[in-house]
Image (cartoon, rainbow, N blue to C red):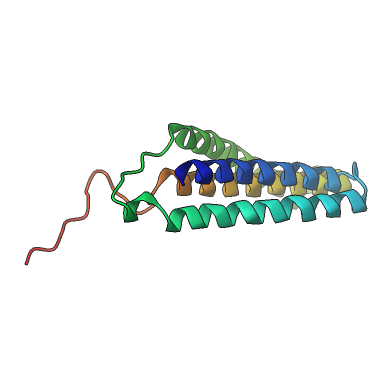
Length: 152
C-alpha cells in the first residue's frame, strides 16, 4: 500500500503544481476562461482522488500490521527545497506589499498580477510542504526525546 500511497502523493504534488501554473496563466490572461475552468475541474478531481488514496493508505498504514514503514528520502529533499522556495516567495510577497503601500510601482495592474502570482506560488509550495511532511511520517514524532511509556 505504501507504493500506491507514494504514487498518489507524487501525482497530487504534480496536480497541485499544474493547477498553480494554470492559475498564474489565468491571472496574466494567457489562457481563456473556458480552458482554465475545465483544467481546474479535471485536475481538481484527480487531485481529490489522489488525496483520498493517500488518506486511505494512511488508514491502512503499516503500523496496524506491525511492519515498520521507512519513508522515501525524496520526500525530505522535496520538502526542504520547497521550504526554501516558500521562504523566498513569502519574502518577495512582503516586499511587493511594501512597494504597494508606499506607491513605488505606478502600474497597479502589473503589480496586482505579480502579487497574485507570487501568492499562488506560495500557496502551492505550502501544500507541497504539507504533503511531503505527511509522507515523511508522524508529524508529532520527536527523535531526540521519544515519548515515554507510563510506568505502572
